[in-house]
Length: 81
Image 1: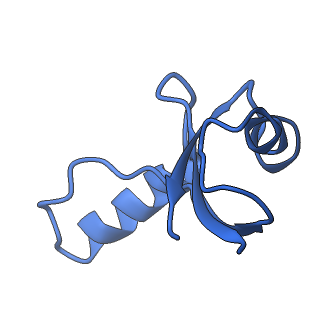
Image 2: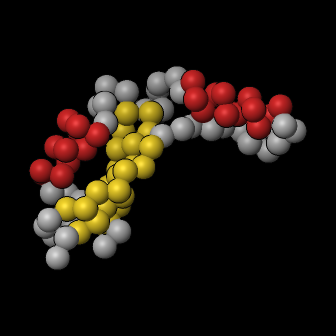
């Protein structure tokens, strides 16, 4: 039975996130001053023909080499099923 993963990709903390800055400014402009920081990333749902093991080297290679840019992004893998 296939496994399903949710892969979260976010800019590294040390990298400027212009989308996050723009969203924060828009929120402040709309009077929503409670938001202190915003970082914008992406989520990718991946069905995998294999066990639900987020430590699988092949799965991590896909995340590192195809789905993210390891120079400016970090990723995490969540098992959905």
